[in-house]
Length: 128
Image 1 (cartoon, one colour):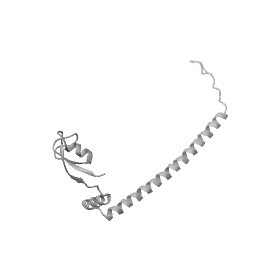
Image 2 (image 1 turned 90 degrees about the vertical axis):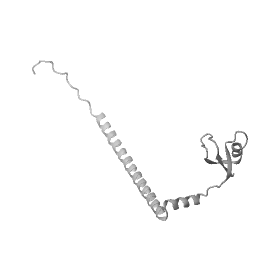
Image 3 (image 1 turned 180 degrees about the horizontal axis):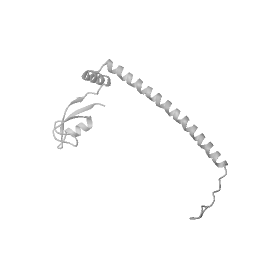
Image 4 (image 1 turned 90 degrees about the horizontal axis):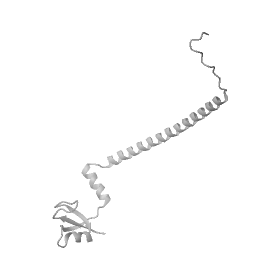
């Protein structure tokens, strides 16, 4: 679907006077014809080519092959960190299991010991 560029002659919605925006042909026709026209058609919009957009950005920013290398190194570093975190998570899970087993063993051992009865507290002021 081709897009048409409309240059606004007055403010319309979020568009200000003298701004240009792309619309489908039907919407552009509604905006530019009739007594409530808010702009004029200035041409067809070119569909962007993603490859050329990236190439243009690289040329504008001076980025090139060295940026690709840096990006690959950064991705490798992220993968290494993710693997390290996964290992630490597995180790933590194992330690939690060990702690739970020890707590259960202590609870079983505590339940087997008979509770000692304590005597009544001494009377106040009594000599022993």
